[in-house]
Image (cartoon, rainbow over all chains, first blue to last red; front, side, top):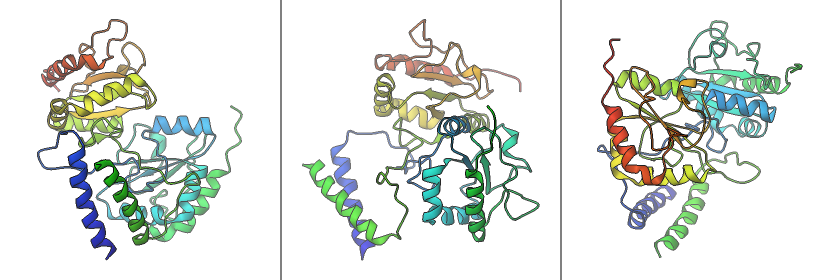
Length: 169
Length: 169
């Protein structure tokens, strides 16, 4: 019922907005949905775009950084994405205590792939810019991989990352 | 009139969609609009997220890359953004012939700032991964800056960038 109502409203809105706006360029293959920086991992979080940006924020806000490596067409990534984006506790902590970055493309920084490049992979970085290679998941062959059943471990690891390394900068 | 209709519809939609969806985490300061990768420079374009990703696409698609450096709270950036996003010809060419990247944070690659870091700044990169430092704007002190009145020059420069460097890779 609500879905049907929504569909009708969406059509009305599309027509109304196309009447109100100036003529814009539309790609040959039809209109696209604008890509979001969240890529579905939490639309309400403020995402860094690049690793450089994320490190800058981590340092200046003195907050740990959580980097999620994933791929749009990977079912394991999609399963983790669903769990992370729908877990209110995770989202709240990420919003309040972390700088967040999700990447579908590897960086040139090898510290972000301590045991290789695979997805999904979650790496924590201390505001001192030290990659927390000690904060690992459950799997010895892919130490930074998480599955949906590992959500409690992920939460525990987030708490670990919040205990900042004492460095003398 | 259309605006008023839209506002009403948006409220109805927001209520309807909050009824239909599971309870999601909402930040303390209220709901945010998800950030887009386009950041307003063309919602219908497919944007690379990072410079590494953009270079990969440029090489594999054999298309030139256009990198826009800008800042959200810079009026000169905002003025260029308006012109670029509303120019159908620019949007069409960018969609069909270019890989596009917009950044609000500098990369560590110094080749992207041949005469310093400032915004707005537009740098073209050949698919051979060579920064086209020869493709410049109108200003000798900020060679890669453009103003809204330079839109014809920007189009000419895009055409220049489309003539790929002949390199033997």
